[in-house]
Image (cartoon, rainbow, N blue to C red; front, side, top):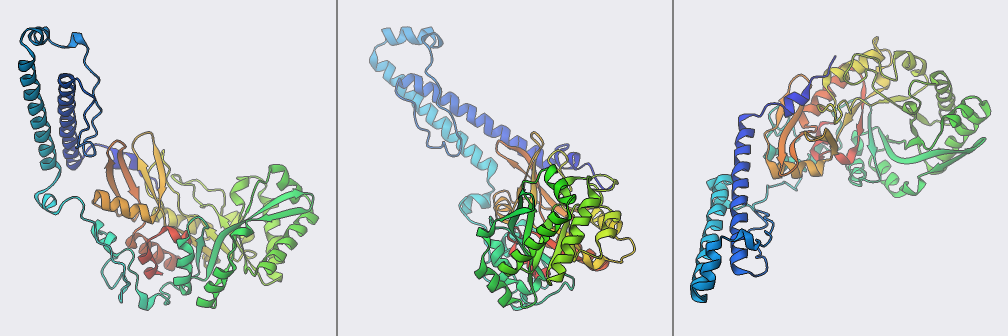
Length: 487
């Protein structure tokens, strides 16, 4: 069993650093209370509209409601009535001066407690430096592929890839890169580093069943012929194989197609015509997980027939498959050696989803290395078809919260912004071969981010070489530009 209880490791007992952070939060809360009290007294004595606190951006203090007559000390009321307006004015001015002095003192105290002497001199507006020019050296030559990266170095270097070697391949196996319409940077990556890929899969297409032997293909509005031309111009041997989903299919739709050779023939013929008309080199088909463990024999028959039709037209078929070992267990996944053996001779490549290992309810690594190895070895223990397996690499990460078992994907841009804001210590976990770091939001509690690094990617590329597989990357626009020096 490869799962480790990372919930305790990440969000467990507080470290010394976190205790110090809590103390600072306590000081801030005390400061807020003092300012609120001062604001209440000032408001009552002046009997004017609530004051705007000029420090509200630093310490967001709500205006206090007016005090009731019963809340004012009786002595103050009698003095105001008997002592005359002049004495009351003196008291008002004195209290305003005291409140102002108290507010200023607390702000200074907070500043001293949260800023170092160096920070105070430099000011809070100083931005972390980022290189925007390309480098003459690879990330390996710059000494950046390490287990102990610094946040400032990632921020500085992440855009700077080696321009001299951007067309050289360092990984000899097949490399499939996914590109999505909602992340346009991936389109640029596929052109800049085109020679490093053998397959590019734009996530464009859906097939819908509209009735007996009637199929509709949607998503062609996303197809970019100009981009396809540019990609092929930069890399002569690359194949463009759009992903296609069986969108909106009911269980009855699948049963109808499985039970009719005419339906299977019509679907296969339509897919071949679509590829020829749109100048595609084949398809990446994502369908296996939709049926769970049901109708596997029938689905295999459909896929074999589809592959034969595509191959006859000199087109490729890549099948997306779930991990062979269920995450967090030693139990078989939805796609096992049995199904792999039946399809291996017919399918050109298998895009293996060796990521999404953890969940918000069970936070932790995206893709623990021992689990990745097991998923490949379970599928093909005798290494007969390893070259057809594309070991999945995630170029996104996950941001987990300790409050309410929450988690969400994090892409390269927000990862860099989080490093800039929190300047965390990045921790290496040797067992899973991944980095993560912890940070704390003002009102969002403790968080932990698992995001790929140069070192974690390098080790997975080395594993792919050792196992004899290719790789598939989900997805190109989500990573950092200097990742591609490794391919």
